[in-house]
Image 1 (cartoon, rainbow, N blue to C red):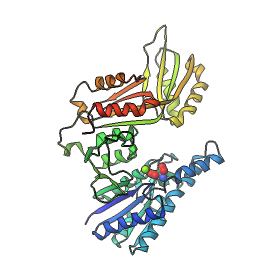
Image 2: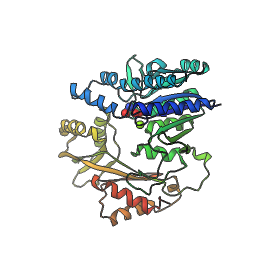
Image 3: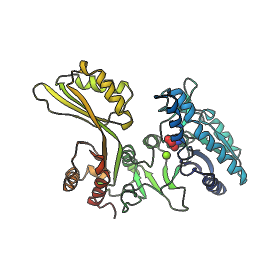
Image 4: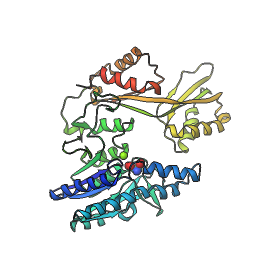
Length: 406
Ligand code: ASP
Ligand code: MG
């Protein structure tokens, strides 16, 4: 008998029928003798609907109140799932994030988990109940409802698995595992039986939507055994996320290609080439809580230089505005940008021991006439920023160049 955390995303609980299917799946695992904690998302489309409603009230919705609204989506699904389980004779009990309590910091809409009280969950499990917890939400240190950022239910599930020292955290989703790239873009994409945490973190942070990045980091940190499985089909072992030290397979140079349209480029042109300029520009952006990804500073000429960086597309306008307000103090000639760019990345632990991976990527893109605007690399990934209209083409040709379909 094991303690297993199941997590079901929005698509998996997207209709009453699907919620009943989830209940059957949970009942089956229960019948096999396992203790089950289920973490669920809001029904698909619901969080988007709530975000849109909030924006009808305020251009920039008040973060505390936005969390009050957003958290309702998950509250509906926990109650419905508990009913569906009771209806088929399985004792279950639902909890919101604050009832558990899943404690977070005070950064509304992107709160971080600080502590999880496992007492109520353990008592219910001991009493033979299935415990259902609302994903994506918690309670802040000031006692307010908080949410963990879009896709945050994955992180809730992993954090709860860590707190309970669960044997496995199973993420049920609308795909049957982690693929070498998005099969909707590249039909030859292959499901991987295993992938290492390091690779998964890169793929998740690079826009592969299977798991929220923070959930993978959390799992890596607390050594939670994490598996991605399909909730829509029966059978299959999905993809197990392994720890590098337990995985002695020979690694290919590249194991996956990720792409991300949530990118915008900002250019700060003609700034004085002197110490402190990068800090002046990026410090202001960081103070606004905007995440900067790729950064390029050109070699200066005649005492000035151009400075470019990328931010999430949703922060594009705000970033331009806040830099324009500081244009004089920064001493920039002008500030512009482009929000029709995307990032395509190749990831692989084997890159550490294979040379020429970056060159092969650049050659492959050049052969297709795709212009590279920015490049960033780490030990196990190479990312390029390109025009978004080439995103699918770039993904396809790179997938092929590294023979990921076989
Ligand atoms: N319902 C939230 C969202 O749509 C959280 C989640 O699904 O993980 O982002
Ligand atoms: Mg999700």
